[in-house]
Length: 229
Image: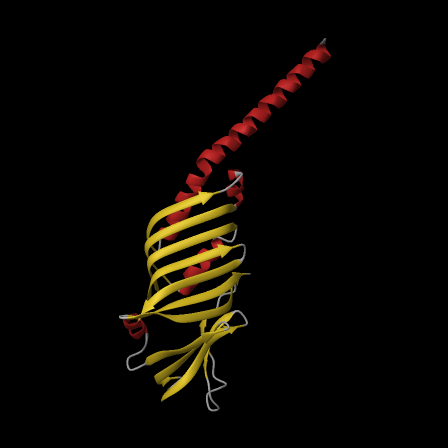
């Protein structure tokens, strides 16, 4: 009889543990995404005004390990440096699918609008619009850039002013090089000069693009493809 009673107590204990585990999973599924959304909103909110954050995870317990199926963030305005942007992306490396949209985005001195970032696995794609006046404001006084062509992940421009310390008009190409975003002039005299625009150990740039968005007022759509590493 003692053995039977002990076996029943063991079964009841196991059933209680299973019920407790199911309750924990249920509570995590109900409250986990909301808690994760609040944490993400706080992190992104350090750089501007966040309008909404949505998190989806199944099972939600995976949020405890910094993983999620998808995250969607919408912000009214953000202002951050390239290093801070790369840090945010690296913090979200456990998210399988991520979308971030910002009506206004400032990266250092460059002001952009209608900015969108998408992450799928380790692949990243970003796009934004910049107006002609914002291009001028981001450049040194007396410096001018004209878009010539964009293909195969490279953007070719005509630059006039003090490019690379030379007061002249030259053509230059912005492209990915070993995971960095660089620009270098074309021509025999300056062909070996390279200026790094962006470099981060966790973000490997694969290509950039640019196209005319509108003629009045003039604006351009900028794109970039990269991956986390």
